Length: 64
Image (cartoon, rainbow, N blue to C red):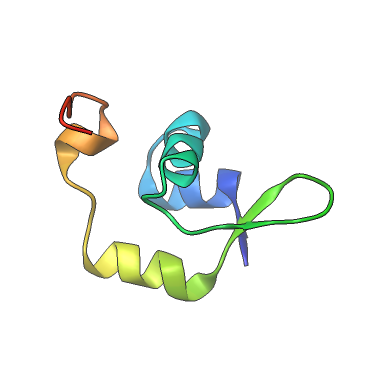
């Protein structure tokens, strides 16, 4: 499983973007008892195969 920071580095986005995706339900994550999130490898693999549209990455998608 990957941390939020690791996913942000892999996708070349900020931690806050990854957290926004998690909180918005666009990226599935597991919340550990300590309160930190982890993203399963399969979820990241799926995201890498089917990337998020640029307007979602930069926050300009106002239809959400």
